[in-house]
Length: 162
Image 1 (cartoon, rainbow, N blue to C red):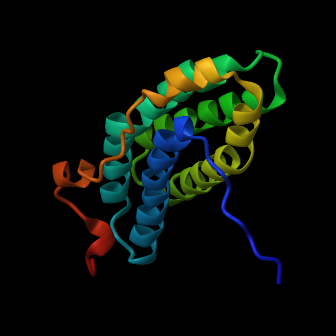
Image 2: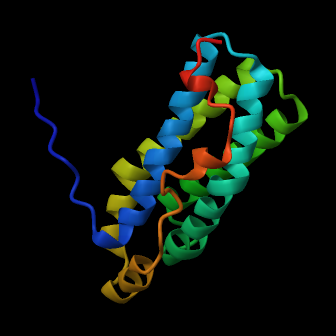
């Protein structure tokens, strides 16, 4: 069995990786809610809250601080931007239809795939492409994910029995 070694992350990227942890927790919460047969509207409401409180800022920070450091024609940049647009589209669709299991599943899958892509491919590409001066600017960014977001949300459906 091949042993996987952790990816060496430049300290400038750490705040984004911390945010990704909370993004993956959102994916887990969606799936937990669906597995526990929680009312779809309850899950959707949390998704919209998380998107507004966390994910929008994270995406804007990535686009301004990271993607902008790559040429517009860079394939990984294009892929990341396209995935952001798809996630925005899915969230808008959930906002319009808060009772769609398929939209929640599609969002969970898209968000997980996107985070894995950024962590495994895009961040390594950025680290090897952009200069130290840009990395120093990026390093000053503070993570969105502090673990307190759920304190603002009363319905912890992912821990309930229903």
